[in-house]
Length: 364
Image (cartoon, rainbow, N blue to C red; front, side, top):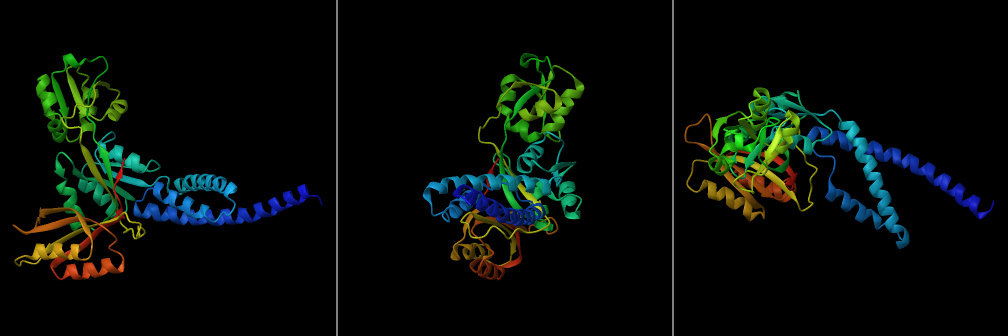
């Protein structure tokens, strides 16, 4: 057998071994996909992919071959993602509003392979995940202009679902009218109260009358259905395409800094973030009715080296003038240091709940 035949025979044997290894790898990918579906996690994790390629490329001793192996790993991961999408395809994603609402836009960006299910309000969407009717919920928790979404935070405090991801969506408002309408002919604008407030300067400048709707997408739908060229909706530019409307003006927000943070909720807590340096967690708690109780609780976090990124208080619905507290902090509370911190913190709390554990916030 000459050298060419020997090389080809060697490749055939290697390919046979690689086929078995590939099958094992895809079986592991399926397990990961099922975990991601259960916990409401995205398939694509750019940071994780970079780390794997950099680490595994070090196994290649031949520097001339190493760059080709990195390309091979990238292609292999692309195939793995396609397989995971097939496994997860059809996951039911609950959101509040109708198609074209900002929550729907966020859900499609986070879970492009999922099936978005519309619910009339936050409570219905939350309960759909709680009951198992849907796999994942995408609900807003805060807007940079209007502040926290109290109803969602209250459900997080009282309910059993876990936050396994936080995503930030920039909110861009446009003026939408029926086909053939003109900005000079608009007399009335319709939208959600927050959208109207965020575009108050623009509305005053043009002298428009305003009508409030439950959400921006419903306002756009109304404009399409009424067919009145003097009525326009304030909504996302994506909504224009959904309802066959013309974009009469872009970026009419008073502030260019307008972002809504969405929480991804599921029935199972994610414990797979680990000590990657970008771990985050969310706590909700009540403190004992003692002088300095809140200050003592907050000191516990800092004494264990956890950096608090947000602190808010909310009134408890069933107890007058009583409050619960909401904290977002950097670090991994699942390790030994975190467990010690939680035990110490519990001494100062009447109730303590870890609501979520996730990687750093993702900008959509």
